[in-house]
Length: 473
Image (spheres, helix red, strand yellow):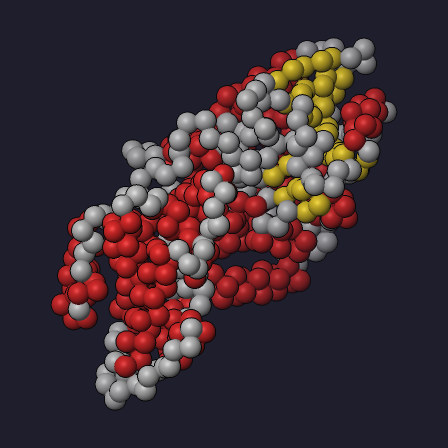
């Protein structure tokens, strides 16, 4: 997994190369190996500096999402989750404060936890390869960078520059990463290791990160400046508008940066750890990981077209959604309000917009008292979910996780739910049956409880999965 070579100048080259994997990912054994190697090299007086690199084409693609169950499994308290979640950050912090200069030499892609390891090193070099990308995409899976990313990135490039990268989760090319200040040098692949060692040999790498030094000056505006206060107010408002309060990760990232920027690094990292633990215990991150990562991975491996509009389950959900929107109009609700409530529930398109696209006429609203808005949102989510569940039962073998993925990609069912089947399964059988009976009494048999209950289970947590772009922490 790790090989260590110490040259005549005392420079230790640590090469990460996970057997049986096309890419390196961080799992618990990898983390233990990194920690043990760092401790050994720090204790060796002959070692003058350390270089972390990879024996594969990429550096580290992220954390193995199979460790999700270890962080959010049943029976864990919030404190236990936080302690486990902080394990990677603790290892990276020990590397950062080891007292010897450490260089990250990336032959290719570094994402999520892999890039957080680079941030914890004192100097970052990358090979100039066209397919390499660098970034912290955790927000896309309902999480935040939990191993120092929300604290080191703003201290490295400034709060204003860091927030978009953290909130959007965008991966940068080598050139973009260097221009943004994430990389200290970009060199031809064949010069990568020589350049890394030369930086140590020539004593151009300080063993103490700038943010731990007395008098550290923030790049750009300082955290307490009026400019940064205005920035947070603006970004906070935009984030709430964009997420409609349905996705907690962006708000948690903002809180991490806002609070952590006013603290010394060790205390800031604890703030980050606690916010991460809250997210990882939440249903939204679990739903996003299982559907948008594991189900998408399974779909891609099967060579299928996810979200195919001609698929029977996709069609069943979309048609039920459109029909429910049309019924709401006939019940007396204005078309504008129907569309707005659909978007407030996180649906990508309003049912009437889909109806118009299909050439359907929008009926006239009757002069009747409209339904309560909470119930309207519930109907718009539940009617298509039940239709997909019935279609799934009739299909005799379709995979529920793929049906969920198809509904999200095919017609815009809200990703925060994990998909229609995940949504009704997460309600639990008793609550689902109660809500279905109440709606069935008022609105008809389309809200009858499903004959077969899909389960939200531990989808995607199978042994030995390849997670080439996972970014849990």
